[in-house]
Length: 370
Image (cartoon, rainbow, N blue to C red; front, side, top):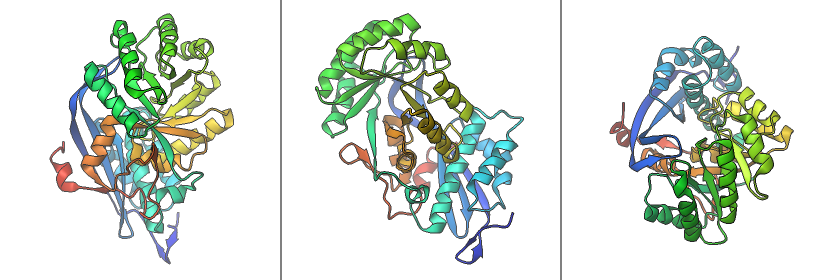
């Protein structure tokens, strides 16, 4: 394929650079099913036409090895403007490795970098390139880990509410007998006006989740995420049918392929579908997920990675909000210049900055390199 001309010159991908960085948490963290003390971010850079596109994914360091050993050679030499074609070539290259999981996150990091590069070559923001339908996207503060003591739980959630964020989310499910106290104290901290979301990460059984939903409704919880395993589509549908009025059932963050999201929507399993651009193979696939949601008339919510989802969310009509996740907000601020800051509970892309508007602070990142 002949490369597209940009300012009269053909632009082909010249080089791919990747790094893996492990960032310790600022305190022990856990949710309903796992605990962790660090997060690994894979940062990919793609060079063409004197511009450098940047993308990243939250995944195991093996994703960086896959980029170096397999995907870089697929991307190099291709048309910098033909991102969907390069995405398709990467998907074909991992056929024998398995598309979900590590391979999907590796593709995501590169696909995001390719979209960032294309926007930079054209001198526009990524939101502008994708075609915005809104100027900014609402956020919900997300953390409230089950490992937090009650004082820290209230301080974090209450701090977001005081900052004008209209929705906050906390983790539940690790110790179900304590969830009633924790959720009640969360409501006390955020006041009456702020929406309260809970996320069980699939920790409850079906009838246990139904019972918890009744209690959560007393605290005006409006979002119950993964009350049962996201693989249990019948269980999610049961919760959706029987949850109290005004309580949305959400799931989808573990989706890696379009078929995963299609099956969840066709099962009528969720009131709101979630998707993570760093897991579902990047912006190219996220746009397709948005089209699925539009076809099924189901809202879409973006899972974590706020600096990326802010641009995509402005261009995907069914997207209603994005997760302003404590760990990822902290990591983005530590590693990148140009990170977006919320105003009035909304994250709005800087349309004057090309691409994502992010630059890797290499000296700072090197301290965490794997």
